Length: 329
RNA sequence: CCGGACUUAGCUCAGCCUGGUAGAGCAGCCGACUGUAGAUCGGCUUGCCCCCCGUUCAAAUCGGGGAGUCCGGACCA
Image 1 (cartoon, chains in turn brown, cyan):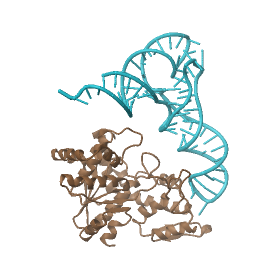
Image 2 (image 1 turned 60 degrees about the vertical axis):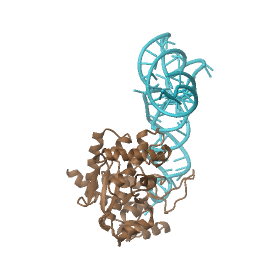
Image 3 (image 1 turned 90 degrees about the horizontal axis):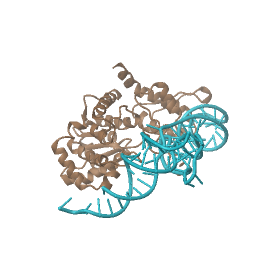
Image 4 (image 1 turned 120 degrees about the horizontal axis):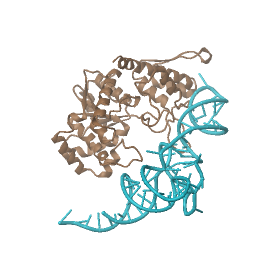
């Protein structure tokens, strides 16, 4: 697989295509980053961008993982001390999951975001940005809560982190695109180069197929789940026998989260997937690419229940090494 | 700083006037039906009624004080 293909596979969008092509022409030593608010437990939402970081490392990129302790604090996630402890735990989980510890630079936000220069640049960005724009860019606002000033500063710090970390490529889920667009708009005002950005798709809510999966509301699969928990969660997932389900009664779009996880988590990390099936239903099936599996589900050749048991097995194999490594500590 | 509205289940809210041991919808959980899930049907759970003080046999409900949120007004030295 060439560099361009590694960089762009399974990406929902890149901004811009020309800039990505330029990076792909000479990826060695270029720096990519993702920022995470420390939440303690790595789940398959985080792992989706982590997969992309692994792709980028393979393509020759240097990778920075920002453990955004200051951001978490601004977003009312607890005391600094508690947040830093979860940040450490999360770093261990990333390494256990498969990020190369030697090629990955883990940075705490508080390592550089409290410096004088940073603060003054931040104020300069505040001057460039309306409250409405900042609020729109803030992906992490809990709906219904009243917005704090800290939450308006939050996306501006995300923008400013990019030049301070020397990032060429900013990576994030699609919910981060407004932040990256804000960064592209506003960084030139302080004579900083705006980032190229790459956004991964969002996996839909496991139970309903609607919206995005979240660890706070609803069900997610994490690095800490036991085999039996994974089986139960996957079994309970929404999975009609199609890749393109009809909208629900209220007109909300639905996705098939089981297929999404196959596409974005399983096939990128495994060469082939075996679906074990009792003889009465036709015996085992083997797939080497996602498209073939999707086509069989669509045609009825592959029953959702069999797809689910294969998914649970693959996910368990994906996270078991990390899970065991963390238990040994 | 002044004024108004609001605060009840995880969420959106009803109940308050006229005190009598807390309700609906949604969500959640369980079961039936599907070789998965969803849909559908049947059942079930959930509460510091914002806090404190008072009145009363009895307060979510009445009176006083306080807090939080939202909206408006004033101030603009």
